[in-house]
Length: 287
Image (cartoon, rainbow, N blue to C red):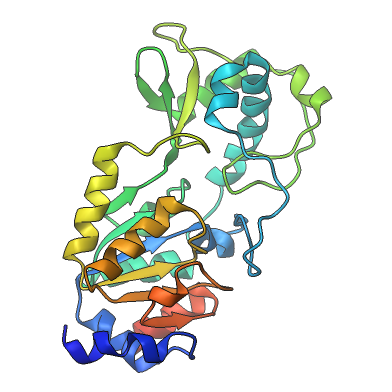
Protein backbone atom coordinates (compact mmCIF):
# COMPACT_ATOMS: atom_id res chain seq x y z
CA UNK A 1 0.00 0.00 0.00
CA UNK A 2 1.58 3.29 -1.01
CA UNK A 3 1.45 6.72 0.61
CA UNK A 4 -0.34 8.29 -2.38
CA UNK A 5 -3.52 6.36 -1.69
CA UNK A 6 -3.46 7.12 1.99
CA UNK A 7 -2.83 10.78 1.29
CA UNK A 8 -5.97 10.93 -0.87
CA UNK A 9 -8.22 10.36 2.13
CA UNK A 10 -9.08 13.97 2.90
CA UNK A 11 -9.74 14.77 -0.77
CA UNK A 12 -12.09 11.86 -1.39
CA UNK A 13 -14.32 11.97 1.71
CA UNK A 14 -17.82 13.06 0.66
CA UNK A 15 -17.19 12.54 -3.09
CA UNK A 16 -18.63 9.78 -5.24
CA UNK A 17 -16.55 6.67 -4.81
CA UNK A 18 -13.95 5.98 -7.46
CA UNK A 19 -14.87 2.47 -8.57
CA UNK A 20 -11.45 1.92 -10.07
CA UNK A 21 -9.77 2.81 -6.76
CA UNK A 22 -12.11 0.51 -4.86
CA UNK A 23 -11.35 -2.35 -7.25
CA UNK A 24 -7.62 -1.61 -7.05
CA UNK A 25 -7.63 -1.76 -3.25
CA UNK A 26 -9.65 -4.97 -3.15
CA UNK A 27 -7.43 -6.53 -5.83
CA UNK A 28 -4.43 -5.99 -3.53
CA UNK A 29 -5.98 -8.61 -1.23
CA UNK A 30 -5.90 -9.12 2.54
CA UNK A 31 -9.24 -7.33 2.78
CA UNK A 32 -11.13 -7.67 6.07
CA UNK A 33 -14.88 -7.19 5.73
CA UNK A 34 -16.92 -5.62 8.52
CA UNK A 35 -20.59 -6.30 7.83
CA UNK A 36 -23.71 -4.94 9.50
CA UNK A 37 -27.46 -5.38 9.36
CA UNK A 38 -27.68 -3.76 5.92
CA UNK A 39 -25.82 -6.78 4.57
CA UNK A 40 -28.92 -8.92 5.09
CA UNK A 41 -31.73 -6.56 4.05
CA UNK A 42 -31.70 -8.02 0.53
CA UNK A 43 -32.40 -11.39 2.19
CA UNK A 44 -35.58 -9.98 3.75
CA UNK A 45 -34.16 -9.25 7.19
CA UNK A 46 -34.71 -5.59 8.16
CA UNK A 47 -31.90 -3.44 9.51
CA UNK A 48 -32.04 -1.21 12.57
CA UNK A 49 -31.92 2.22 10.99
CA UNK A 50 -32.59 2.13 7.25
CA UNK A 51 -31.14 4.59 4.76
CA UNK A 52 -31.78 7.69 6.90
CA UNK A 53 -29.59 6.45 9.74
CA UNK A 54 -32.44 6.94 12.21
CA UNK A 55 -33.48 4.08 14.44
CA UNK A 56 -36.59 2.18 13.40
CA UNK A 57 -39.36 1.94 16.04
CA UNK A 58 -38.48 -1.15 18.09
CA UNK A 59 -37.75 -2.26 21.63
CA UNK A 60 -34.84 -4.72 21.49
CA UNK A 61 -34.37 -6.93 24.52
CA UNK A 62 -31.64 -5.83 26.92
CA UNK A 63 -29.48 -8.20 28.93
CA UNK A 64 -30.59 -6.63 32.19
CA UNK A 65 -34.29 -7.04 31.39
CA UNK A 66 -33.84 -10.60 30.17
CA UNK A 67 -31.93 -11.79 33.22
CA UNK A 68 -34.02 -9.83 35.70
CA UNK A 69 -37.54 -10.92 34.79
CA UNK A 70 -39.08 -14.34 34.14
CA UNK A 71 -42.01 -12.61 32.44
CA UNK A 72 -39.64 -10.73 30.13
CA UNK A 73 -38.01 -14.05 29.20
CA UNK A 74 -41.44 -15.53 28.44
CA UNK A 75 -42.24 -12.63 26.12
CA UNK A 76 -38.85 -12.85 24.46
CA UNK A 77 -38.92 -16.59 23.83
CA UNK A 78 -42.48 -16.43 22.44
CA UNK A 79 -41.49 -13.73 19.97
CA UNK A 80 -38.15 -15.35 19.17
CA UNK A 81 -39.72 -18.80 18.74
CA UNK A 82 -41.66 -17.52 15.74
CA UNK A 83 -38.98 -15.10 14.55
CA UNK A 84 -36.28 -17.75 14.43
CA UNK A 85 -38.32 -19.83 12.01
CA UNK A 86 -38.35 -16.88 9.62
CA UNK A 87 -34.66 -16.15 10.14
CA UNK A 88 -33.88 -19.81 9.51
CA UNK A 89 -35.72 -19.58 6.19
CA UNK A 90 -33.68 -16.58 4.97
CA UNK A 91 -31.22 -17.26 2.15
CA UNK A 92 -27.91 -15.56 1.35
CA UNK A 93 -28.16 -12.74 -1.17
CA UNK A 94 -25.84 -11.57 -3.95
CA UNK A 95 -23.82 -9.55 -1.46
CA UNK A 96 -23.11 -12.56 0.77
CA UNK A 97 -22.21 -14.63 -2.27
CA UNK A 98 -19.88 -11.94 -3.59
CA UNK A 99 -18.01 -11.75 -0.27
CA UNK A 100 -17.64 -15.55 -0.26
CA UNK A 101 -16.33 -15.46 -3.84
CA UNK A 102 -13.80 -12.74 -2.92
CA UNK A 103 -12.57 -15.02 -0.14
CA UNK A 104 -12.39 -17.96 -2.55
CA UNK A 105 -10.23 -15.84 -4.86
CA UNK A 106 -7.88 -15.06 -1.99
CA UNK A 107 -8.79 -11.38 -1.76
CA UNK A 108 -10.83 -11.38 1.47
CA UNK A 109 -8.87 -12.61 4.48
CA UNK A 110 -11.75 -12.62 6.99
CA UNK A 111 -15.23 -11.38 7.75
CA UNK A 112 -16.18 -9.66 10.99
CA UNK A 113 -19.96 -9.64 11.09
CA UNK A 114 -22.24 -7.82 13.50
CA UNK A 115 -25.12 -9.99 12.25
CA UNK A 116 -26.44 -13.08 14.02
CA UNK A 117 -28.14 -14.74 11.03
CA UNK A 118 -25.33 -17.02 9.78
CA UNK A 119 -25.83 -15.96 6.16
CA UNK A 120 -22.15 -15.34 5.46
CA UNK A 121 -21.39 -18.97 6.32
CA UNK A 122 -24.41 -20.18 4.36
CA UNK A 123 -23.03 -18.35 1.31
CA UNK A 124 -19.67 -20.11 1.66
CA UNK A 125 -17.50 -17.73 3.70
CA UNK A 126 -15.12 -19.76 5.85
CA UNK A 127 -13.27 -17.26 8.04
CA UNK A 128 -16.09 -15.50 9.88
CA UNK A 129 -15.94 -13.90 13.32
CA UNK A 130 -19.46 -13.51 14.70
CA UNK A 131 -18.96 -10.40 16.81
CA UNK A 132 -22.44 -10.57 18.35
CA UNK A 133 -22.87 -14.36 18.33
CA UNK A 134 -25.41 -16.47 16.45
CA UNK A 135 -29.10 -17.25 16.77
CA UNK A 136 -28.33 -20.84 15.80
CA UNK A 137 -27.01 -21.51 19.29
CA UNK A 138 -28.41 -21.33 22.83
CA UNK A 139 -26.35 -20.89 25.99
CA UNK A 140 -27.28 -21.73 29.59
CA UNK A 141 -26.53 -18.88 31.99
CA UNK A 142 -26.18 -21.45 34.79
CA UNK A 143 -23.81 -24.16 33.57
CA UNK A 144 -22.58 -22.50 30.38
CA UNK A 145 -23.63 -25.40 28.13
CA UNK A 146 -24.22 -24.50 24.48
CA UNK A 147 -26.82 -26.37 22.45
CA UNK A 148 -28.35 -25.97 19.02
CA UNK A 149 -31.33 -23.73 18.39
CA UNK A 150 -32.94 -26.58 16.45
CA UNK A 151 -32.98 -28.69 19.61
CA UNK A 152 -34.56 -25.85 21.59
CA UNK A 153 -37.12 -25.35 18.84
CA UNK A 154 -38.18 -29.00 19.13
CA UNK A 155 -38.49 -28.71 22.93
CA UNK A 156 -40.57 -25.51 22.67
CA UNK A 157 -42.87 -27.08 20.11
CA UNK A 158 -43.37 -30.06 22.41
CA UNK A 159 -44.45 -27.99 25.43
CA UNK A 160 -46.53 -25.55 23.35
CA UNK A 161 -48.44 -27.90 21.02
CA UNK A 162 -51.53 -25.72 20.66
CA UNK A 163 -49.97 -22.27 21.00
CA UNK A 164 -50.81 -19.92 18.14
CA UNK A 165 -50.01 -16.29 17.39
CA UNK A 166 -50.10 -13.86 14.48
CA UNK A 167 -46.54 -12.61 14.11
CA UNK A 168 -45.66 -9.24 12.65
CA UNK A 169 -42.50 -8.50 10.71
CA UNK A 170 -39.30 -10.15 11.88
CA UNK A 171 -36.92 -7.77 13.64
CA UNK A 172 -33.16 -7.56 12.99
CA UNK A 173 -32.43 -9.45 16.21
CA UNK A 174 -34.66 -12.36 15.18
CA UNK A 175 -37.87 -11.84 17.13
CA UNK A 176 -41.29 -10.64 15.99
CA UNK A 177 -43.97 -8.37 17.41
CA UNK A 178 -46.68 -10.09 19.44
CA UNK A 179 -49.37 -8.89 21.83
CA UNK A 180 -49.12 -9.51 25.56
CA UNK A 181 -52.16 -11.78 25.30
CA UNK A 182 -50.35 -13.96 22.76
CA UNK A 183 -47.15 -14.26 24.78
CA UNK A 184 -48.96 -14.88 28.09
CA UNK A 185 -49.93 -18.42 27.10
CA UNK A 186 -46.45 -19.39 25.89
CA UNK A 187 -44.37 -21.77 28.02
CA UNK A 188 -40.56 -21.38 27.87
CA UNK A 189 -38.15 -24.14 28.89
CA UNK A 190 -35.03 -24.25 31.05
CA UNK A 191 -31.67 -25.92 30.53
CA UNK A 192 -32.09 -29.67 30.15
CA UNK A 193 -28.86 -30.27 32.10
CA UNK A 194 -29.11 -27.96 35.13
CA UNK A 195 -32.53 -26.23 34.86
CA UNK A 196 -30.73 -22.91 34.43
CA UNK A 197 -31.91 -19.93 32.37
CA UNK A 198 -31.48 -20.33 28.61
CA UNK A 199 -30.46 -17.41 26.45
CA UNK A 200 -29.74 -17.18 22.72
CA UNK A 201 -25.98 -17.18 22.17
CA UNK A 202 -26.02 -13.56 21.02
CA UNK A 203 -24.94 -10.28 22.58
CA UNK A 204 -27.98 -8.39 23.85
CA UNK A 205 -28.04 -4.62 24.23
CA UNK A 206 -26.32 -3.84 27.53
CA UNK A 207 -24.12 -6.93 27.29
CA UNK A 208 -20.38 -6.92 26.60
CA UNK A 209 -18.70 -8.73 23.71
CA UNK A 210 -16.17 -11.22 25.14
CA UNK A 211 -12.73 -9.62 25.24
CA UNK A 212 -10.92 -12.43 23.35
CA UNK A 213 -13.35 -11.97 20.45
CA UNK A 214 -12.73 -8.22 20.41
CA UNK A 215 -8.95 -8.74 20.48
CA UNK A 216 -9.21 -11.17 17.55
CA UNK A 217 -11.03 -8.51 15.54
CA UNK A 218 -8.45 -5.87 16.43
CA UNK A 219 -5.68 -8.22 15.29
CA UNK A 220 -7.45 -8.96 12.00
CA UNK A 221 -7.88 -5.23 11.42
CA UNK A 222 -4.21 -4.49 12.05
CA UNK A 223 -3.14 -7.12 9.49
CA UNK A 224 -5.64 -6.00 6.85
CA UNK A 225 -4.71 -4.50 3.52
CA UNK A 226 -8.02 -2.64 3.72
CA UNK A 227 -11.12 -2.66 5.91
CA UNK A 228 -14.28 -2.94 3.81
CA UNK A 229 -17.43 -1.91 5.69
CA UNK A 230 -20.63 -3.34 4.20
CA UNK A 231 -24.13 -2.36 5.31
CA UNK A 232 -23.43 -0.69 8.64
CA UNK A 233 -24.22 2.85 9.78
CA UNK A 234 -21.43 2.42 12.37
CA UNK A 235 -23.61 4.24 14.89
CA UNK A 236 -22.69 2.05 17.84
CA UNK A 237 -19.23 1.55 19.29
CA UNK A 238 -19.26 -2.23 18.88
CA UNK A 239 -18.40 -2.08 15.16
CA UNK A 240 -17.11 1.48 14.81
CA UNK A 241 -14.12 0.80 17.08
CA UNK A 242 -12.57 -1.36 14.36
CA UNK A 243 -12.91 1.43 11.81
CA UNK A 244 -11.22 3.82 14.20
CA UNK A 245 -8.54 1.20 14.85
CA UNK A 246 -7.94 0.80 11.12
CA UNK A 247 -7.69 4.55 10.59
CA UNK A 248 -5.27 4.88 13.50
CA UNK A 249 -3.03 2.24 11.88
CA UNK A 250 -3.30 3.86 8.42
CA UNK A 251 -5.34 0.96 7.04
CA UNK A 252 -7.56 2.21 4.19
CA UNK A 253 -11.25 2.20 5.12
CA UNK A 254 -13.77 1.51 2.34
CA UNK A 255 -17.50 1.89 3.03
CA UNK A 256 -20.48 0.70 1.00
CA UNK A 257 -23.77 1.50 2.73
CA UNK A 258 -27.21 2.92 2.02
CA UNK A 259 -27.22 6.28 3.77
CA UNK A 260 -24.58 8.05 5.85
CA UNK A 261 -22.38 6.41 8.46
CA UNK A 262 -20.78 7.79 11.56
CA UNK A 263 -17.33 6.94 10.19
CA UNK A 264 -17.61 8.62 6.79
CA UNK A 265 -14.77 11.04 7.70
CA UNK A 266 -12.44 8.04 8.13
CA UNK A 267 -13.26 6.56 4.72
CA UNK A 268 -10.93 6.66 1.74
CA UNK A 269 -13.80 5.38 -0.45
CA UNK A 270 -17.49 5.86 0.32
CA UNK A 271 -20.32 4.51 -1.83
CA UNK A 272 -24.04 4.96 -1.15
CA UNK A 273 -25.43 2.00 -3.11
CA UNK A 274 -27.20 -1.37 -2.75
CA UNK A 275 -24.74 -4.04 -1.70
CA UNK A 276 -25.73 -6.97 -3.90
CA UNK A 277 -25.48 -5.26 -7.31
CA UNK A 278 -22.47 -3.20 -6.26
CA UNK A 279 -20.45 -6.17 -5.06
CA UNK A 280 -21.39 -8.25 -8.08
CA UNK A 281 -20.21 -5.40 -10.32
CA UNK A 282 -16.99 -5.24 -8.31
CA UNK A 283 -16.46 -8.96 -8.86
CA UNK A 284 -16.85 -8.53 -12.58
CA UNK A 285 -14.05 -5.94 -12.69
CA UNK A 286 -11.55 -8.17 -10.91
CA UNK A 287 -9.42 -10.85 -12.56
